[in-house]
Length: 103
Image (tube, rainbow, N blue to C red):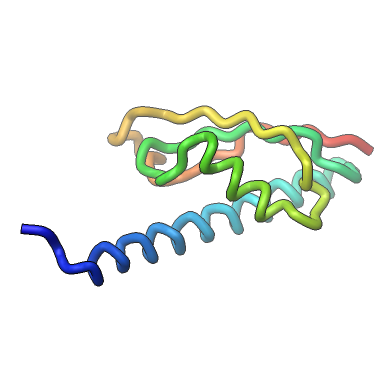
């Protein structure tokens, strides 16, 4: 028996809110690292994507491009690695592994 559409929509809305919260947190960290290092421009970020984060590397890049628009991170190269272990304690998250900046 299929679930009513409101449940599917609610799940998608919750997923979108989760993704936005992850991206807001990540952008804050990226821009904080850039500022602390005296960087004018973020040139590359490396991230680890949890198996339950709702991101593929391609999907993450789309969200990153939107979140970075108009910031020092706009145009940065994104290296995203998707984990496949849903039991990892960080499986629902995104971990910032490194930030490269140019002055």
